[in-house]
Figure 1: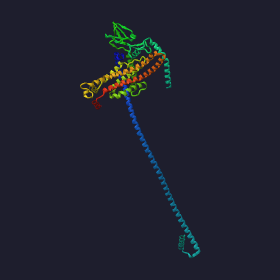
Figure 2: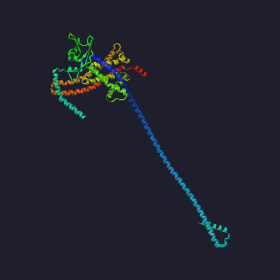
Figure 3: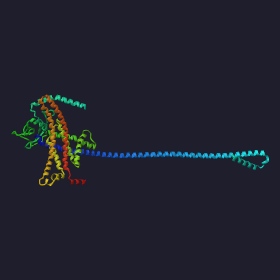
Figure 4: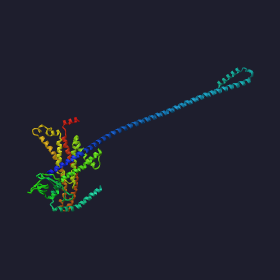
Length: 165
Length: 366
């Protein structure tokens, strides 16, 4: 049958056609295509690798940032606590200082009052003794001529009165 | 989707209504001559000196006939001169295409005493040769833009048709050639890619029914024979030592190979059956596909004898089946091109295999 007997002319032309096609493609098409395809595959591989690395780095950076943030937060809390403590200390100090100052003022005032009282007492005593001597002199007349002895007598009497108080 | 469904239903209905008339008309036309399905099938599957003008049964596109006569003289003339078994006389030489006898369908020289002699060499640009060159041009037109793209844009991925072609090539290159051949892939990839795309284009061109296609190229044993012979030579001429050692001194018990070379005979037989299987696989698959489509079409004319209703039904069924078969053949076109390439790759890779010692030497040299 004709179908199963290869025709010489067609074999010849097939060979020539294939050779021509192969040479043309071999020279002009396949090197460029294979290079392109290979380099693209490589590029994609590298891209994936690069992306994976980048992601790792990003993850690391994120983690780092989170750590920093946590640290900062705890430091902030520390500082706030410290500030709080210092505030209350200052207030405490100020308060005690004020109390001390007030006590001092008070003491000074007390001393001054005591002084005044004593002075007033002395003045009053002098006046009373003078008045008493006057009165006694007029009552007794010449009986009590020695003035100094008289004053001493009155003073003693006044002391007695005071201790009786 | 609904539109598509409606269209299909409409088309089938129209077909059923129209087909009986067409079929009976065709049957009337055929009735004048003898209707011979076998003749038609082999006419369509075989080669020819002219190429049918689309939708015209009588006229053929003339192609050059180039023959060396038995005495060594060269003759070249248009196939139109000997079309329809006409006689063409050129000086002392008379040429024709006999309709009967052993040289049926071939350019034959009529000697003065009436005997028919085939020319010594028939290098005519037949329908198949013409289709071959058209396929070459198509392959170039398809592949060159991809190469140009890569030269211009480097690693960037092309889009559209160029991208589709590139994807196809990459599918074979990355999917078959590289994993099978490994470091030798750069050496053999040009041949294997050429084979793949060439067979694929020839297959698809064969599925087109009219002029630039329609030649049953890969369903012709000469074409597949050349391709598998090239694979055969690629395998054996570039083979490494290990390959020959496996053939002539394989690792089997000595009595299997020493006094009577049983293994050697089996191995050599294997070497020769590989190209034979490649040849027949591609040829038979493609020819079978073409034949089924033609037979399905011929069913219309065979059934037309039983009346219009049968013809209508037969036509509908046959056309639907033909469409299905043609679509299947598109798939087969790809699969067969792929299988041929894959087997070629495997055969070549087997011959490139390094023995253990050689492998170690190579690895350490690296």
